[in-house]
Length: 255
Image 1 (cartoon, rainbow, N blue to C red):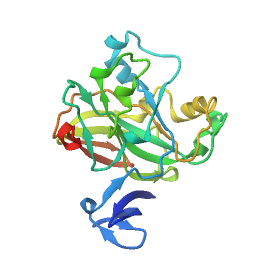
Image 2 (tube, rainbow, N blue to C red):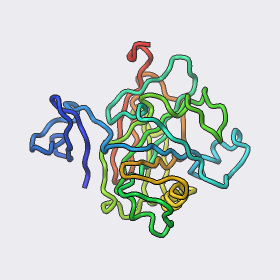
Image 3 (cartoon, rainbow, N blue to C red):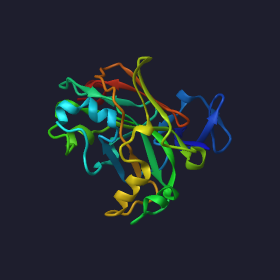
């Protein structure tokens, strides 16, 4: 089952897909552009993975000076980073290289503490699409992504749909792609994750309790290129959905 959270006529609604756009829980229908799309679930802690695809590590090998790492590269993000489908993301005027990152987002459904990998998937409620933008100009250290790169307002796009785990038979066999203004700029598969979902849940739950609504952003494949004001970016994951947003400049945000 696919569900979304949208704002419509002064209220927040749960919505499902409909041929005319979306169907609200009260039975009304609305077109996609008549609603404001929100992240499709109540988001808890945002846990992000860096360098979790082998091809992406290879793509950045000259900057990394390594080809692998011993532990997952994990960092946290604040709630102000989040926007939904069809939202605008700010590109500061002083940057030269800002890029998209199409990622499978894993949503925790029940508390997980000291979970073994063999049982980890029972703690997954479902999945959504994430586009987790990064600004390379501000990067100080690949091993410790700093706040200016990865914790920026409007730079973590989630949605449009939350898909139940039961409807995704194998989350490690999904095609990912990103299109910029209709042209394919990134393509990959979740099969190429270095640390798969059970491994990540086992690793994280050793030192923190994962709670319902927590979301794990599992990393991105290779193919990152610069994006500019006015670009339409669409991240798509097979069976999960297509997530669209627009890049805008400082003026839209009064800066």
